[in-house]
Amino acid sequence: MEVAVLLKVLLFVVALLDGIYLGVLLHEVGHALAALLVTRQSVTLQVGTSDRNVRFSLGRLTALLGLAGFRYGATRYDRSSESIRVQRWVIAGGPIASLCVTACLGLSLWRFEPWSWIWVALFAFFVANFRILIVSLWPIEYPAPDGSGDVWLSDGLDFWRIGKR
Image 1 (tube, rainbow, N blue to C red):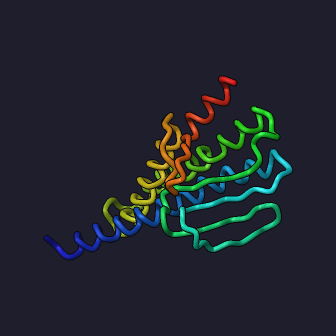
Image 2: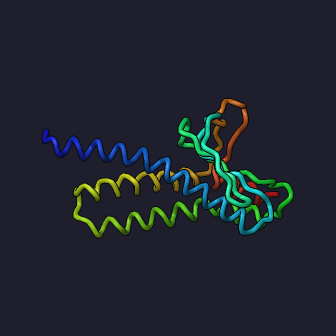
């Protein structure tokens, strides 16, 4: 097997892992921006499940970024004080952000020669973000990754269950 092919496979794997982290971050930024726009609350955005996070604040937004459990993210605000309409906008913010990023990456693939270095990296980012979009819309519940025994809902299931109230 050619060395260039092996290096492109390695590039794909590294870009895919980076794309998952960045995709989860952008997905949660979508939720957080929606929450900041439609509520007057402080919002906490978290990527990763680690207790050791990089923390920074910008106005009403606090971001906690960790590496352990980087496939998971959460945006927190006091949902109980908001209407169902507001909650739905916040829930939809993440998938909308993921859809926009996935569409932009997919369209950018046309600009480059297939299997070139940049195309391989962009394709990996596209695959990562498409995966995040599908998983967020799929109506599933899964155990919290921190082992607390809590149950987390996908955005699709959360959106659907809010409508049943």
